[in-house]
Picture 1: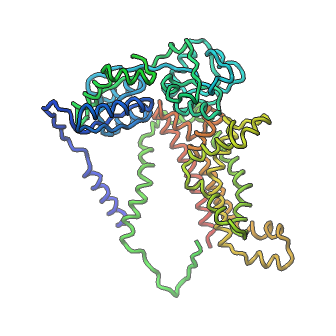
Picture 2: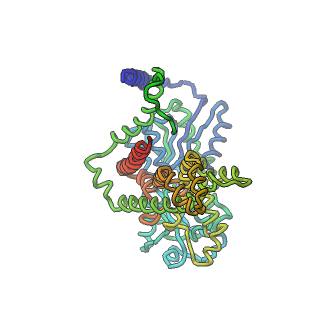
Picture 3: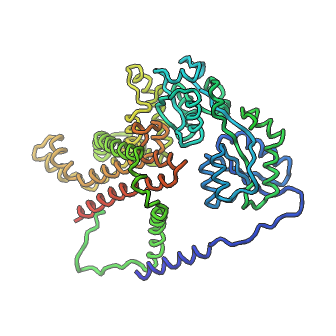
Length: 257
Length: 270
């Protein structure tokens, strides 16, 4: 028992020794952007932000951009738990609001893109789905996102706008899972973002529908307060907001905010 | 497992004192995160959170599917363990390695494999679909996913029990004229019953915690395919308090199972 107490004490000392130190990040006076930038970005931004990161490294030699792509709510949790990062790009306003409320954001976030839902079906649309109301007819197995995640919240808004209710066979926790169920042939149709349909390419057929405008998802981006490299963080935000950034996002299917 | 205790006679060997330090660290490594969850519980709302309609549906579905997959594991796993422990044919080692593969496979890989087997366009699924049998997005899919990942736990446990029980009593029974089926029923199975029970408990516990294969293969719909781990994963997106409360519920159920089976196992020791 004494050995146990000694071990516990040793562990406690070890933990206490690792308490956060209160050193302020030294602000650099020079205007040359250099060093590392860590960007936490929504999973749906993987393709576009990876391209922008490469461009950033070319524009500013000596910089390295590191990405962490995950669900926006996961990213907020990681950031509020102290994960070191310089930039945060969220797939919806709600999760950015959580970050603002937690006091981890430097300045105020800016919207840089928007995304809407689309129907995806098996290639060639074998079930002949032409409208949103076609999804409510008996027959096609429809998969959507659960209301708890951003794409599911958007789905609920679209249902309200269209005045119809879907009876999905599954409510997935990620938009990529919805896409997966359609591309693997498990489901006949799914509701995903326009950009996801663009990434899926020939493996699905996208069916646009007018009610989609009932739920426009905006993507905000911001530099973070605890950034060790605030200049580079702001430079990355500026790149995303620039015409060059706009071009990359538009090519992937994102609309202007 | 088969340590024989000799009273008197031998000098008792003490444990080196230094082993307590890493042992304590190891125990704390497991226990502290559990305490951390307890500290995060929103106690005033705990009961409403775990008794909400979606929580009850998820818990009920988890218990039902875990029980069903345990039954599947017993029906398929007992003969499999018998063949692996007593069978003598070429390729037995390869068969054992293949059957135990789900132990080391990430469950999501199991889910993908099941998808391409029982999915609508899968190896077997396309023929089942023609017969009007659809497994995708049904509770059956959840049971299949859980059985796939849990079966090796039962097989390993039972095969170990069969090997340590040996074939002595079986030989005697056979010598006395008992037929193989009689030997199996009256000698072998009663002999390895503790091993079978602990294997079934392990399979049940593994089924209860199954997440990756279910999410990949079965989908997620309240009351149909959304088991407790899936519900926790989903609630975490919006309601961290609910996710933590449900996590505790799962921990309590799992702890109950582990404690029940370990007391049984200790009681079974001579």
